[in-house]
Length: 218
Ligand code: DC
Image 1 (cartoon, rainbow, N blue to C red):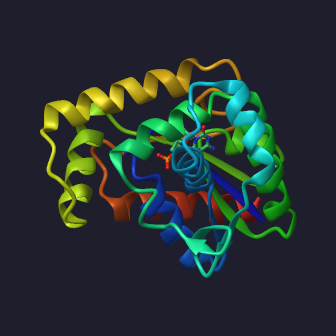
Image 2: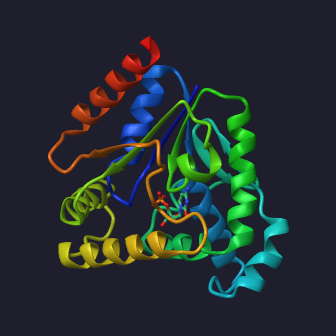
């Protein structure tokens, strides 16, 4: 069983995907964390993330993997280091580079080969797992997503940024992710779009589980 959850930043994909994986006893694949870890690697090595040739050249040395729900760069757990505003921007930048997408898509397909996953990202239903059993596209208004993002930063005791600034950043990242040439952010033709602007986290999860149970009966 493969379930894909795609959508823009801050739509609630991560919490919904994790809960779905828990409820359905599937493995959670956070593809965004892989783009983030790759961006962190490049920043730490001093590679200019806008220099496509330089990033591509360094790809051979990157070792990304998951262990017990944490993301690793080589033998180092980088789960916390990848959740910063700097990496928000850098991961979106490296994700435009064709060689980066090819490299991570391959890794994701390898992880998916074992089956039984909830794969979260931007192109899980369109490119990486076109054969998925259930595809969802989770979205919400930019204002609502900025609000949720702020609450998330507050709960992690990160620097508090103004709502307006977060909203601007979200809109900028949406634009970059939607307009890039390869694997742009968009719902797959056979994806079910869920707008969570006026739904609670629990309502979204129940809705998705209902759809999966209905689909399995058919
Ligand atoms: O979901 P996230 O915010 O952790 O993702 C970080 C960035 O990685 C996002 O701005 C775009 C990129 N990304 C992507 O291009 N394709 C994916 N499947 C997942 C993330």
